[in-house]
Length: 314
Image (cartoon, rainbow, N blue to C red; front, side, top):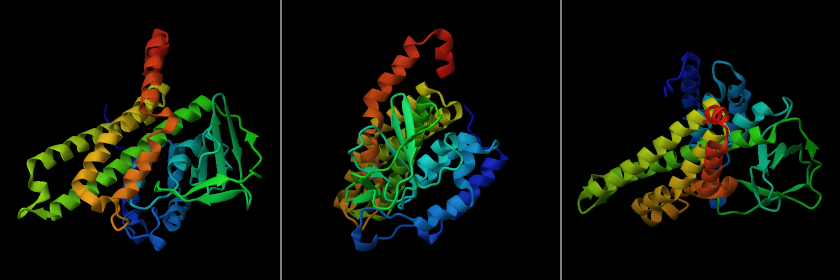
């Protein structure tokens, strides 16, 4: 399948790449040695310049939105991009962002909830939105490299929305898969730079063939994830959304293991950014039940649907 960007997408990505070279998108040890760095400046700049509206633009569309999420996830800082870029296009137009997404396990901490002006609650057969008021959200400390929060007992009022919950879930699968693919790619780049510069036995670590082979294998798997994400974003079919998310969840454990092996203990310190990417991926690895459940869903859709439905979903 050809994913060569069109003229407008090429210009869109070129402008995005210039923006993410700004200092507020780069690596720095967070104040108080926090495990994440929320870049409010970058997030607001992307919002003000319409980047999160790409999915609604005819010449950009969901493919550009998914690639936006993937590229932003490669950064050592975090912005709320996945829900805003892909889900918000299917939600009420006046819904303010940042946007947090709450799945049915309501007691669990939710990423980006401390920053959220809107929250989407997704459940089987239903979807609702809320606009948290002051005092309804508390920040939660977490090892995962996101700002995390949960609702207090006086949580918000939920309003049902006129949207297909299954279609929203498919978009959210694609968004999470794009975010995971980008985070793994950012982590890989940081390790490649490390083994290029780090010397052992008088040679750069990257000159050892075993390391080269395993990094090449990781790169191949991550590139496969990118292509599956773009394919899912193009078709927005439930089968492909489940395959894209299941695949990147499935490769995540092996890729993370290898990257930390080559980085050594430095990869777990707060003075190096590797942990930011890998701990994000560790959290998202269990989304929608994890790889096994997403693959089961894809198999069920593929082989239990009628021939015409299967060709549409595949």
